Image (cartoon, rainbow, N blue to C red; front, side, top):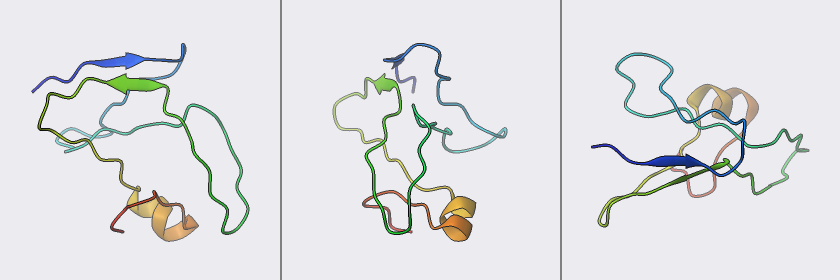
Length: 78
């Protein structure tokens, strides 16, 4: 299935897989940010997607960053 992706902010890379065979795409933040311990922030992606009705898209934490730097995503199961 192809899902249309559009940039909402110029100059940002579109999501892409890191390796052949990856099930998901790497999504990047639209701005740099440093957070203190226990802090939270809403961070944009600079993209919009057009999912067909009846489908979901999930953002999940990268396992290495989540494990070693305690950076995660709200509502993540990890």
